Length: 461
Image (cartoon, rainbow, N blue to C red):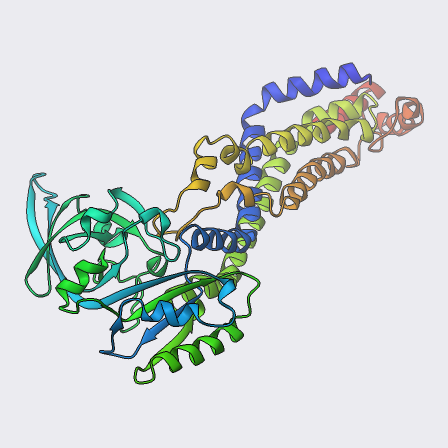
């Protein structure tokens, strides 16, 4: 059998069974793509979290004063900058945070007639005062604007605020509007933002995913000082240090410096890992991977058995052609070449349908690397597709199985012995010796031709 004839034969099989080939290829693509994606979930989440926290410059250390303790603005920064290792400090931001309540109106669409009605939500929250004199120059805990506009120097002391993105999304609040906060102050919110501390919103009691029942509001430091009637004071400082700095040494120096500068004020120096939201995002990755591994293995095994079953059925439908080929003296090796080529066609199509290719062709995949997304899937600054080839071996394993399963099925078909004809795989030169059995059977039949015909009919069946 010449290569040209074999190629023509395989193309004819492809035209006749293209539906089966495409179906098996889709099963392979979905199975291997899902397997590789789930297995690389940990690497993607770790890189995504790190990139998102880096984009918003999450603090490394945090100085919290004890309850109802305040110090004049600038004293914490001065004490922090006085430590011996001040050269490793990349930024310090003082803030004032006060508990509050937020009341806002939102529109709800009626499912029956499609009309809209206005309802009111009242939830507890936190009002955070920051320095917005230079929004682009915030060195620690930057806010990522999702809608509306940023706060600037003209907003200092004004009743203009920013709402946390997920709270606004939960009630479909517009980018601009009015809200009422504790103390009877009516504020104008002018945008929605994401903050690294609130990628997952937790209540003061530790409740998870409380973005609909806990509102975080950001305003200028002067505005919060006026609302809280605490002019010129702060109660916390956020610090960002270089990556090669020793945190234990910096914490010890901070405790000594702040304790000496503010001896009558209680305080606590905490790390980013002490923040419940940060810890929930970073520490749950490994435990979640065990669950995704189970799902990935189940999908992979299901795809293997589904593709094997479909391939075996496709070979079973060729039993008549295999029998004719055997009757004409074609060797089992040559018979097995056809499904082997079909398996190669399925493998190539499966690679084309592999989800990695879909993501690679998505024009928005690269653009997503420059953005911070609102967490339902947390904040993501790394394109997902960069990690879909994390276990590319998952594509190679099913390819080998698909091709070998087709060869094995056809080999079993070609090696089945016919009790009334020549042994399976007999060459044309062996037929004279095989016809002796036909002559013996001819004694019980009309002629040797009729016995040979019955053997061929059995082979065809």
